[in-house]
Image 1: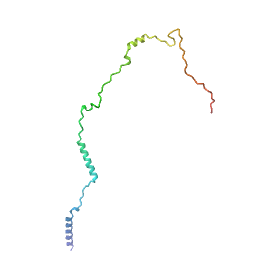
Image 2 (image 1 turned 180 degrees about the vertical axis):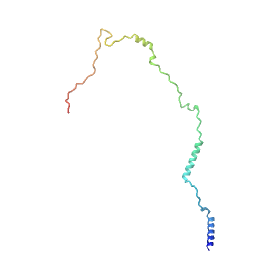
Image 3 (image 1 turned 90 degrees about the vertical axis):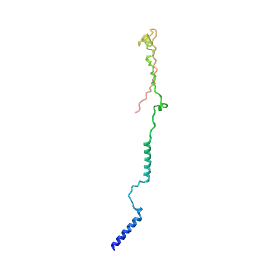
Length: 127
């Protein structure tokens, strides 16, 4: 009797296995949908980056945007303007000595003191 029950159970297992092949579970790696979409976007982005070719730069591209550099002319030195005439005027200049006047008959002008001091009121210091 035990042998018959084992045979019967084998036959039942075989029938069940044949009837339900879709229910067999397999281990697979399933990526969540959001991650798969991010991977698709990332793949598209990287593919477009690799396919991008920058435009060729020409030497004439900057002509309308950049001014031509010209060195400004040096300003004339004020010392070089008329050295000969200034030297002649210096040589013919009258020498002035401090304390003596240029004309003996006139006296030197008196300097006025424009600084005015206000009178101080003596106030006893309070302690």
